[in-house]
Amino acid sequence: TAEDTGTCCEPLARCRTFECPQQMVLKDDASIISCAAHVCTEEDAATCCDPRQTCDALPCPAGHAPRRHADRRYCGAQACSGRDVDACCKPLGRCDEEVCPRGYIAKHGASQRFCARGECGSEDVDTCCDTLGACSSYTCPRGYATRPGVDDVLCLGRTCTERDKGTCCIALALCTSHACPPSFTLKEEAWSIFCMGPRCEGADTEICCDPLARCDTYACPRGYATRPEAETLRCAGHECAARDKGTCCLALAPCSRHACPVGTILKDQASELFCALGECAPEDSPICCDALATCDSFDCPRGFESVGNSSDYFCASDKCSSDDRGTCCDRLASCTSFTCPPGYSTRPNAGELFCAGLGPDGEASC
Image 1 (cartoon, helix red, strand yellow):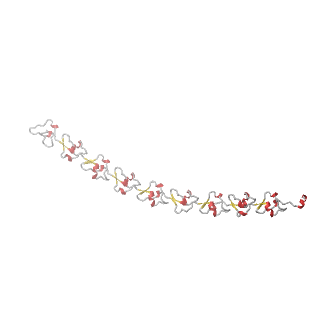
Image 2 (spheres, helix red, strand yellow):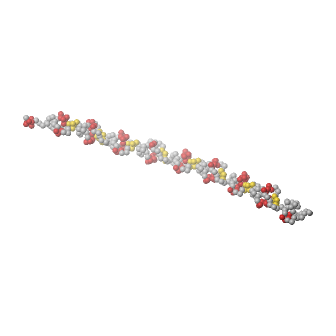
């Protein structure tokens, strides 16, 4: 009868007393589940336990990687959860400068990047590092040129910047240090022009120098003439200027130094006129001299007559004036000096009358 239960029977063991095997975990309601007998045995595993998930079912969080043999590691409960991270996952190493070999530099924020394993190695270079820039990628600024043989030389960072100028570039010499050869002069803007290397050399002449202008391009001022050898003479700069007058020009002699030939006289403005060369010559007479007027153009006043061959006598200038009377005229004899012949008497106004010529025949006049 029911009263004999305590005598004849033993209560079944509860699953909470059962120790599940490694790959299993007690069911959540194990306290109300009974084993098959008064003592739980291995045969009760399926009754009391649920299978546990293996670690390969757990996604490891950032900075972690599954431990080895994750498919043979078990989570702490039927399903894997965040509590199983330490058991199932191992922390990854963080990138640092030591991972990067020569020619590389740690990426920006490298400490926030993770390597493939717990310790970083050569396989993590691409993850942790950037390649350093090379001088071949750097454009030297004005006044500098790429240093020879530095194409493979590395800069200080992933890209080359101003701070790498000294490594990648050489400073060019200014044209102001260039010695231009004869017949050349430094360009006006030489202070801002650079030679092709750290020192100016012969090949830089075309860059730094202008040819000196030839004197035959210079227009000599009034009173000067271009020197005959002007094609071979050079001015002081690439253009001729007033300072080159002494080099390029010959001072002309003023006409005031010219000795005009007989029958001519210096022009009124002779001091402002110039001979063709530095010394006046006979060939300069047309420039410097005016022809003197001849006495045949002079009208002698009353009481005078033209000299014989008056065209052979010259006035004092290019026009005859009253001042030339003494040169161009002979005074006529006064009738008072004439003795009238028999049959004639001296005219009453003989003092105002003149003989027709210098001879004694003055009857008709006196």
